[in-house]
Image 1 (cartoon, one colour):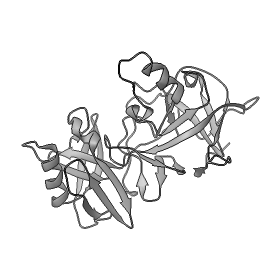
Image 2: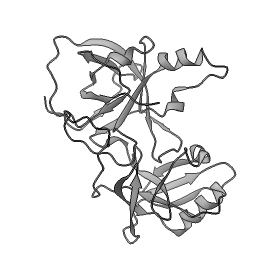
Image 3: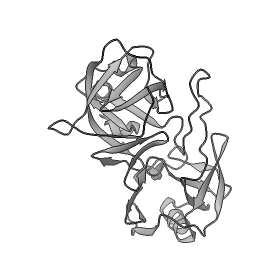
Image 4: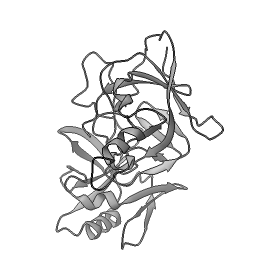
Length: 263
């Protein structure tokens, strides 16, 4: 069955989509969208409900909860927001994430009417055009792989430097549709080729509420699903049930498991 660009549509009365599964296999959290042909399942079985759709426009930035999302081969999209299509880099073009700069997780990036907006604690909001064709294109490095990004300007760079409070230059770049994505180094050789923008490994990550609740019960301080930065959060299933899902269907969209997520 050919994979088409379709919306993840909340179609039930409570605006939650049923999750169906065909087949079973090894554990996973990440889902790849470049899988063109799927095995015909003997039977579709309802295994859960989509409770949240989350887009992270800025890599390591705060999530944006959306009611529906367009499912593209390079990740989820809602309006002008695309998952992990903005990236903070050093002056040399090396990616900067929450691993190196923990304060990045406090940043929000949203888009409206052709403008992006950066906001963070104790900072005035900064608005700038999403499309800045006269700005330079930077060659960036993510986990040793080359990928391009459109520089978002000097004002944005100064804003990031003030927010991060470091004696170092930071720049914000934007991945544009005409740019070539990168292939994850961990892509399994038997799976069809797929590309991503600035995510670590795969276009979509899925996680269940029950798995997070199980983990929280073992910790002194509980955590939420957003801590693990998924795109699709599933309810109404057993903890770690997603470890056995391989081919899944949400509405009219079919997804195939690429690998487990290290988180």
